[in-house]
Length: 378
Ligand SMILES: Nc1nc2c(ncn2[C@@H]2O[C@H](COP(=O)(O)OP(=O)(O)OP(=O)(O)O)[C@@H](O)[C@H]2O)c(=O)[nH]1
Ligand SMILES: *[C@@H]1O[C@H](CO)[C@@H](O)[C@H](O)[C@H]1NC(C)=O
Ligand SMILES: [Mg+2]
Image 1: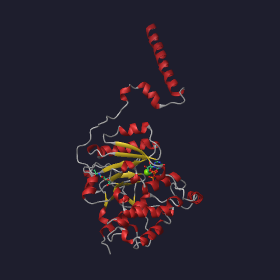
Image 2: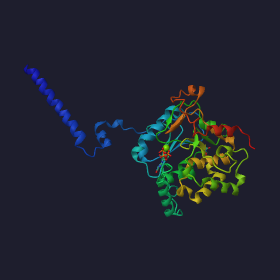
Image 3: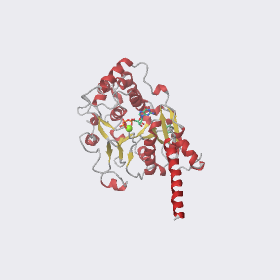
Image 4: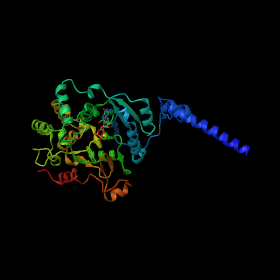
């Protein structure tokens, strides 16, 4: 009896000690910092540093890179996207990653992203003049517009009051491909935080673009919120009148307009996924087009998105055969997704619900794309 009592007592003491320790650790450290606490618990060997010469795939690669624009606060979401891309495709190919931010990336961000791939990774800060609202924008007018768009009770306009969102849209429209870290490359695949890649990719889409003469690739085509681009099409028409020679005959005009260019039907490619050729954005037609749009101020007075801007340019300045629908790359960016159909779905071992896909539905523009793609130039 006595010894059992002692065991019980010891149990209480030991349990109490650890319980107290737990309490102290949980509550008595108000500025609980995971990294400092963990570094005292885990042995240093667990702090991963990527070797200088990590093994890369020996496959011949296209002149291409992944590109990510994000904030330090997007860390968790972008780790998830990068890991999926590596698992589904890039661990077999070793294409480099370029991360861009309007502020410097933190050391933690860089370390954590570098651990997810064996490929070359680089981190860049965006020059101010490629990001901030230019001086010649009338801030009073822009502020007034932001206010009336965000208090518009009739239409829901996402990010109506945000300046940084507008900076982001303008940067993605006219500047990302000018960043010095992207100069060595021609093709890019844009990746965003918190997206899903549903399928294994058993071929190289960059090499596909190159060998098939493709310039712009997409997965989701849908309608844009019209209240963000009220004067965009009039501006585009003005540009077309000025520079008709930039439009090839067999372009994709009938994807974006139901009346031969008189009005915009709001169809666009969802630019959070893009596999495309930066030399197109760097070329004459797009440079003139972007500068024309930019000086109208619609990136700030309205909220022109890079998706309609890229899509309109691709549909006007490219031949339709230069645009490619990646119907085999299952992809989700909330709240929409494209899930491959038929045997493509099996080949890629896709994990998405094939019934949920933007190929169909009221807001989808895939029917229009398919029709426009089949119709010969008038
Ligand atoms: N560095 C930086 N990146 C940004 C900023 N705003 C947006 N981004 C990035 O730009 C891309 C598009 O922004 P999102 O906030 O995803 O915009 P969205 O896709 O239209 O909308 P949701 O994803 O539904 O919020 C993402 O990769 C973001 O991480 C910013 O102010 N700074
Ligand atoms: C890759 O493409 C870029 C942009 O077109 C070009 O400047 C660069 O020389 C190319 N690199 C190679 C190795 O072909
Ligand atoms: Mg997004």
